[in-house]
Length: 256
Length: 256
DNA sequence: GCTCATTTGTCCGTATGTATG
DNA sequence: CCATACATACGGACAAATGAG
Image (cartoon, rainbow over all chains, first blue to last red; front, side):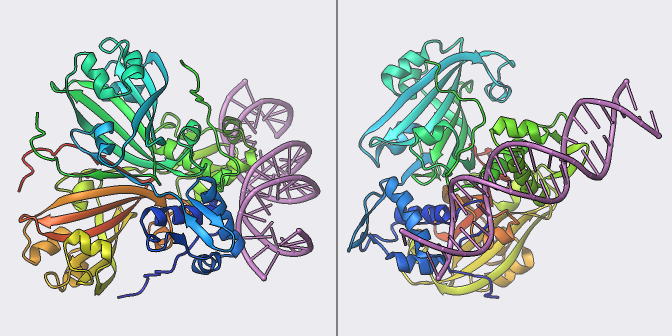
């Protein structure tokens, strides 16, 4: 009845994921979880090596990766100090907005426009927005940062006829909510959100300053105006080690 | 303005994640996305190798991993046939229930009890349930399958005083909803859900029949009875390649 | 039956990355 | 730092199976 609770920390060999990476991921998570808050230091390398059942060198490789990310700093003769701990909660609800989502946990919010283009909507996007296949859409690529640290990359599609020029407006306002407002959409709501997870790839690694191989949470969402007309399709990629998505009942009174 | 859209398929070297694994993950996703539905076959190995910019042997390693999972089956002289495609939608809302969540997409649902124990609630669990630290809780470990294929592992905590014997009841009913009902909780609602993603580890790999190194979606949730009293804390680990979590406005009329 | 192109399967060797002690 | 063992990735060559002509 009580069998099978291998509480011991285990790493999988020959999985295609190097042990040092598995351990680095695990430790980053533990740090963000506050497991070492009492001392502010990581356990000694030998202790970690024993806990994970690996050689000390392997733990050192993992530590090097975390040090490279600026999360820990090894000090000779002392130990390894925890430098930074960042995991943000991002609430998903009917009234999800990026700025609102993180606003209470951090000071410095900013979205940056990476690129924009007008193009035919891909099939999935057209379907989600209720458009005929091939309808021209405005596509925006953004990076969103909290306290100067990038937390997500977003690809956003807007029907081109209704939202021409949203790229320039976003570039100025750095906010989708504000851009909508200028274009005559005073308010909007989240129709649906799908969440999945993949390994980080391509540009996201660079923009999110991830160590390659990291995990990304993908939230695919559709927003509508208050009449229920779809106005935005977006695919936001969050750095999984820095963000936690939360789904909560609506704060109340949010029903338009 | 249009720079930086490297549409080309890229894999990251020296990331601590083997190329064959990155490619396997990518192809599994593409398969589940229906990218090859027209032919039901994978592109030839040489084509994939060119697309990912790797050697054909590396693609073969990735294929071998997918074949091991039963997703594809290579046939000499013909190509590689796609055998199975499974990605389930799991809705998360105020009235999330496992059986309801998947009920409309699949036929054969079952939860299996792996283990149960009564123990002091860990700090995070106690806090979430509004209990004093160390309050005894019943812990259940479950595996949930759809059509005989495991989709998630769950660790569930219940206040021990109110739910003694829930392990036996769950073992019989194979449903948490049914177990609650027998213990005098006719209905319950989801208070909060947190979603994150990690690499699969330990027992989850075995129970979910994952290739080690795969990604897991972690949903940490608290359920309350209709008086708002927390009755369940659970941490459900979904195989990210088989499940997509969806967050939608409540279907309406769902209030019991 | 045969040839041919296509595609997967298997073998060789070699360089580099990973992990141990 | 060193040495050792194994995994990963590459490059090439050829065999085996299939289908088209």
